[in-house]
Length: 122
Figure 1 (cartoon, one colour):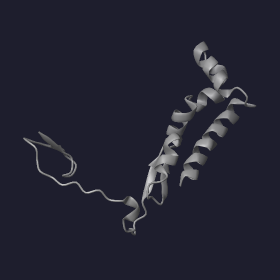
Figure 2: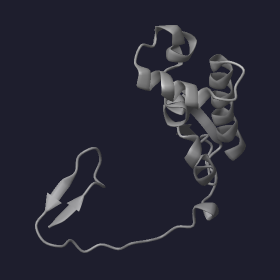
Figure 3: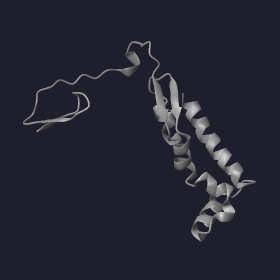
Figure 4: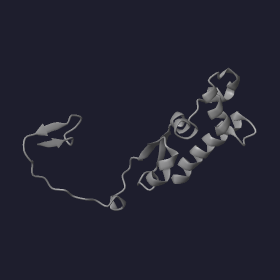
């Protein structure tokens, strides 16, 4: 069986093997296009790897996903720490924010680092 996802927005399954050719292109040798190619980025940890793709920059930086990937704590839990009642969550937040003058400054610093890494990659 052959599965093809090359015919638009629906995949198709064919009986048997369908003959095909494979052609590899050097993306650095492709001619420029007039449309700007912008990436959507969310994970700073992969920014440097994806920053080498032939794109004109970042069109959308998903800050809520930067927070999820890097901070692992909802910003409101940092701002309203007094309302966090779960002892495990409180200990996690304390460990995460250790060394910062305030929980809010931890949030700003970690978010700025993530955005900075996205920007540095392009």
